[in-house]
Length: 258
Image (cartoon, rainbow, N blue to C red; front, side, top):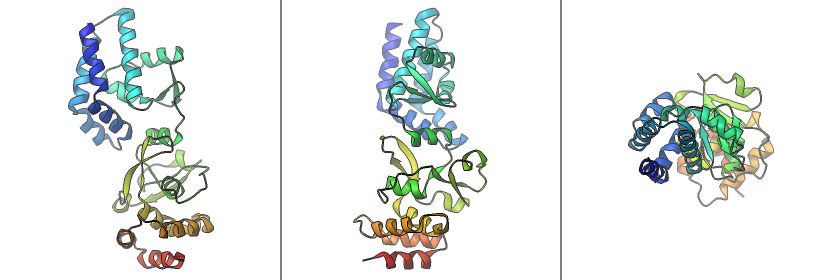
């Protein structure tokens, strides 16, 4: 059994496991989850966990809770109950860790190690996997505004049910042909990866949606963009054309050059 535990520890420490767990956290659709389920690293870990389940009593409990803790450490302190379900680990061990004040439930099905830096962006992404941070949030991620967003601003597909989100946050809906235009993974201020739009898509979005935003903020952010060395005017033009707002975007940007 000790050899088995060592093998599990080695797997958890493996970079492929860390990457697989991160991919699970950011998975966007049921198809993505199915694909990840075929990950060799995940399958191997699941196999060893299945062997662990043949243990019994306190030792079994201690080993499973240790596996959960190590998985969370591999993912910057977070885990979802869905990952554990796929690995065949009962939620009862999450409850034991919560009662032992080792982890805490930060949202439905989402847990964090005690004393983990609260990352509201990452937790929101875990809860709503099909949203993309945009507009004010994207401006903030790209250092195009000094104003800290007071709420989340996200973009979703028009077919996505947004009632629960839109009550407290700003939601923009687009057709499928524009949804993935300019999507990247970017670090939150706390270092976790979330999905957001790149700089050029962000500029197109705020100009397109100027009536739903603080116009002075739009001007400041576009002006800040024109000063950046990493700006890509060709990409901006292509995005704007794809979104049907090329003339408006290019005219607005040219006005902000000093």
